[in-house]
Image 1 (spheres, chains in turn red, orange):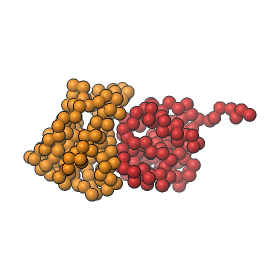
Image 2: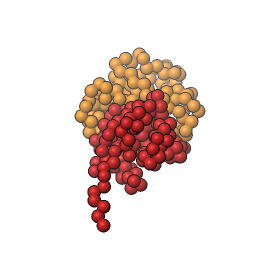
Image 3: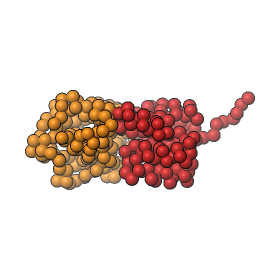
Length: 128
Length: 148
């Protein structure tokens, strides 16, 4: 039986760098994702998350005001079904494990190519 | 004082940044030690404060020309001063963050502080800094590592 086309998923981008936010917005070529907002720190992200209710989030870790790990915890507390891809320069294993334990679903290390980003998002969406 | 293997971590970080983000390799010159507390800067500098197990700072400094071309290589069409400053901070943040692969989680990095057009504001916390020269296309930049 044909279930018809899958609905598009809402994506929120969280990073304190404008060029990274724009880069993720530009390079995400997955038809099922629609960017609904971008935030430059954790506090702003929580507010935007409540307002836009995204299904998928890309999350930086080193940010002013509220860091990414704390923000991951807050977003998961609001909606435990959200899919979160951490996109961070922090390359040690302990940080990745910590983020996953706090509720993130994947980890992409900066710097990244467009292909690496798309592959990471595709893998994340396979869980949706 | 930095060990040779620790300097290699930053060289690898700089190499990886250009290969991945710009998809064009940079040539890394021989690192050298500066002992007068003045390792020098270009027009734009992204400074990362280091705390935790190590203390000090890491900075990436580059001229506008290099940063503009780097933005363009990343498919970014907005080469405004704001984006140039954003990029120089992001390069410093990425190379410093990647260093945790070897230094571990207790190598704690700050958010970037960006200084533009004011070289005097960039001051090394100790007299000894290692300078890693970075040459990319026709441009020169520096990665400066100053750690206790």
